[in-house]
Image: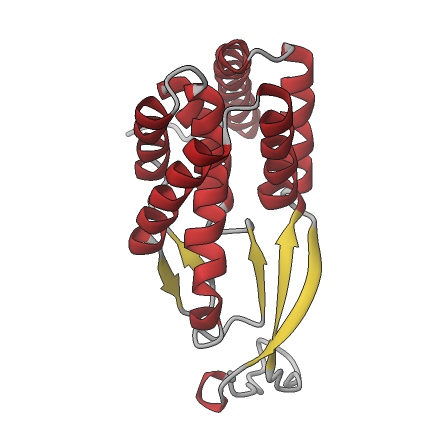
Length: 219
């Protein structure tokens, strides 16, 4: 018979896990910053903004929901009074999962000038892979594996831009996931019943965030 841990022990355990995760993230970020040739403090600031901005979604436009996907109202006593049916889906863009990575990618393009053709070719391939691997989840959004796109981005960067492989890996990984797993899936989002979807939000945030870091580390 084991004695269950006390609340203090649980809090301490969670704190240690968060601390270890943070140290690992900072260590990996330091390596990634060196490969990209940028100051570590700037990379750390960008990481902080991305994590903070992951909870902020900026509405862009709305799309109509097909009649068969509009969820019916429910009058169950546990859920309270029925809410009015919503026949449109709000499409937003996530600050930390899309806007920040896009701006950082544009910064790398302007600062390092890796070349347009390598970026376009690598992004096209990663977009196709992300589209094939991503899947719409009813009521939630788009989900996808988070490790294959960064490996594809790193491989494409090695092939098309060996001199600027780290930058091209980040750029193509970021744009590839956003295009392939989000933008090309917008029509399917109308059919999964979600009332709010976010480009770069839940479901693809991990893919975009980790793709950028892992792709740079692999490049």
